[in-house]
Figure 1 (cartoon, rainbow, N blue to C red):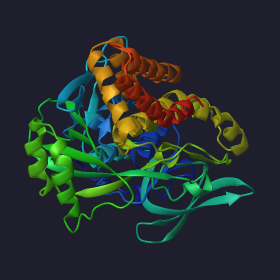
Figure 2 (tube, one colour):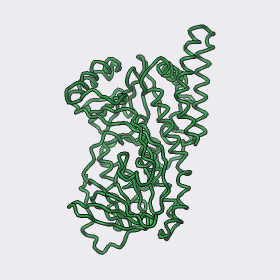
Figure 3 (cartoon, rainbow, N blue to C red):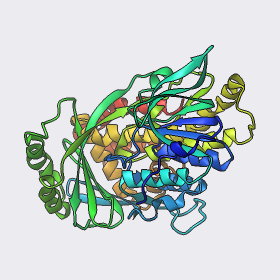
Figure 4 (tube, rainbow, N blue to C red):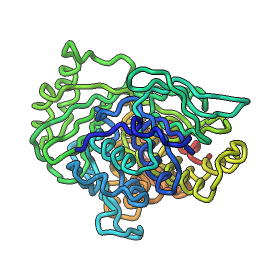
Length: 468
């Protein structure tokens, strides 16, 4: 991996930027490249240009990979030991179910486009930064943005401290904030309410082979959902979703004991040895899982995209797909505009962004919420009933239209809210009828159906929210 070069020192003749982008993560770096390719002068400011060490952002769904191709960034997953992903294998109650990504009826321009990618998040981000910085009209600089410059209600630029700690000011016609889920600047541009849902506890297992190559492995169990996938040719990421605000301590060994005594007994035999032996070697880390609706405040001269705007539970791995989709929508909206100086007119023009992002963002956000509420939320009789019913349904419908439709939604290949809502209600009705009436009504079936109804009541708000 090449080293990121801070280009600010060699840019004394650099004119005022057209666009300032705060945050050189996936969204920021991709957007800088896209806008610079269209001839914009871009000032990209990132707090830390060293390789990020994050546990999430390691799965790029097929829909996101197609967006990467659209942006001309395909080579950013080359040379980082990225692994192809063909779908998932789901485990529950001693059974397994393979759910591949759909390959038919989805347009693609190359043979491997309808596959996902897994990788080290930091390697991918560094690759994107290098790609952006390779363009002469991108000024990449390490610095911490402390505030936005506001004049008569319009954002005119940013104040920041550069790498040496010197207070700096940068001006541009448009300032775009994409500094991630822990954004310090979203308070200026949107509602800041962020809900902490659970925690992901993760670690890396070295030199193991998964039973199903090129697949994510999901274990649906009580009390935790477990996600396992390759992030390189020799490394496997293990995630356990732990509900609650008070986690067992990692430093005292309580978390290791919890994983071994509570979670490990639910792990399938083919994954058990790897899971157990890697816990003590894998350097356990915990990360809060958050959720945030997109509720921006319309501010002339500034815009917000990516996780700074909107967050969903990471269990389904849809964040980068939404971020890259946001980048393409914003690029296409700005492309016909030659003058960005009229901030009020630009803001009015960009209002359609929120409508255009709805199909992808609302679909993936809602699927993430529904999947988490169904398979990851704290178990009770109702949630366990709905987990079993969902798994039974997908098992009976394997390789069917329903499984393909579900995987098309979760992968970002078919971002359609109406299709998602119809599929959710179809599955609900099918499972209720199956639990209540088949093979014949009985007190046991009626009790099972009642538990399903209670479970669906907790999920319906997420589905309804996806309509708007």
